[in-house]
Amino acid sequence: MPATEEEIRQFAVFAADRLRHSHNATSLEELVEEWRSSHPSADDAAAIRASLHDARRHEGRSLAEFIGEFRERHRLGDTG
Image (cartoon, rainbow, N blue to C red; front, side, top):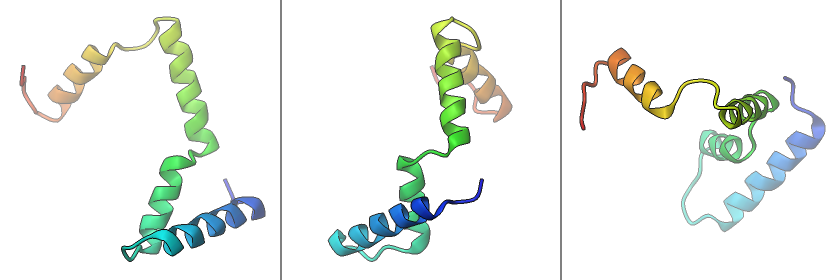
């Protein structure tokens, strides 16, 4: 989804403030990553809402099932 002028303005304000108050040099990539972690995209927000809806209805996979499948897929074995 294309950025709006308002989103660009908000990011510019965020980046300028972060650079002003940071004691460490920050790259553009780090600023974008930090911005994205605190400002999820509309698609991410919709996916989170859908997941929460499923969890409230006890639909979808349990965390234990997901972890088991993840460990198997990545050949991590059982640590517990």
